Image 1 (spheres, rainbow, N blue to C red):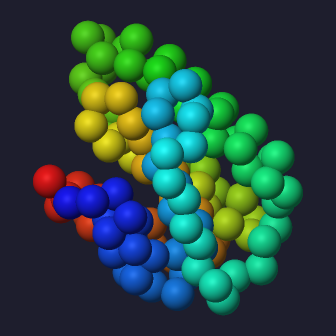
Image 2 (image 1 turned 135 degrees about the vertical axis):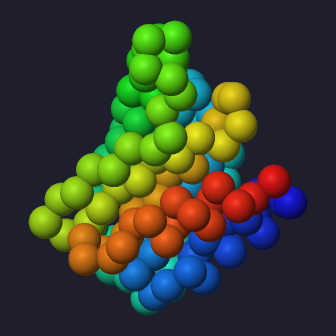
Length: 115
């Protein structure tokens, strides 16, 4: 499946899905799209810094692989949004933001269904 198609499928899960990004484990943005209906809450600089931090944190979690097994996903819930980080192959992560009240498991199930 093409990257842009996968991102669009995630955005279409619900109007509560705000932004979907794919990046490598160095935090380099590969592709990103957002719902046209959402109000941007952070600057582009803040968004890229958050993406880079998520990629760094994901690499750190890989160090626990032998002890704990692979990390399946990470959820950070804020007052206004949830941030989901889900692996996409060995060297990439999918970074999704949703409204805070949205059931994030819907996104996780969809991403896991991709081949």
